[in-house]
Length: 125
Image 1 (cartoon, rainbow, N blue to C red):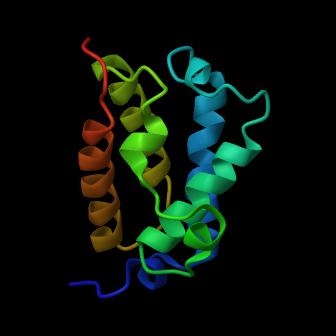
Image 2: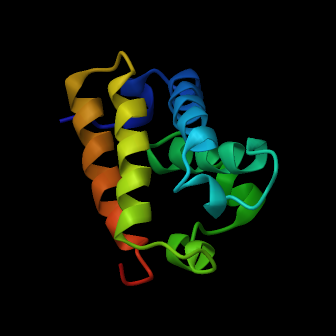
């Protein structure tokens, strides 16, 4: 059992690499890109990075800057159906699998992203 996934994963550098690889895919994805209204994905990328760092046991910078994550509320304005969820999860899974992290960290990431992405569905279809 891993007590601190943030540390076991390799700290901030690993989370920045994960999110960078994820957003590289989002930038090209015809299903996902329309869900990100900002022309530059840098702000969304930084928010996700800080959230994941905090969620997995790192510094609480996300809370200090943005308050409680309230994931469902923050995602409510975006039409997320099964198609969008599946595209998001496929991009995130590819990003996770590209990392050189211990199997327990990889499995924890994939389990979390599976559940969290399912919870973000807010539209039929």
